[in-house]
Image (tube, rainbow, N blue to C red; front, top):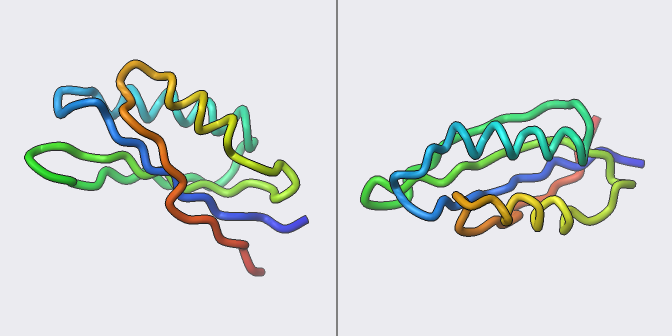
Length: 92
């Protein structure tokens, strides 16, 4: 099966939320779900000091839907929403 590149956007519940803490917990769940692999984390300014956390990772297509991963991350107290913003097949 092919590899897919997933872009996951996490919105915190407020500006006072520690994004590094969310990042650490989310990365741990992603590794449990997709295994060790490439991962890029970026903080994106939204408005009025609010920043979203964008995590890009690679997983095997055979793992199927990321719905369970999204649900697990959305259960963090600090997270307001979780959204898959992009899915692409890796070429090469």
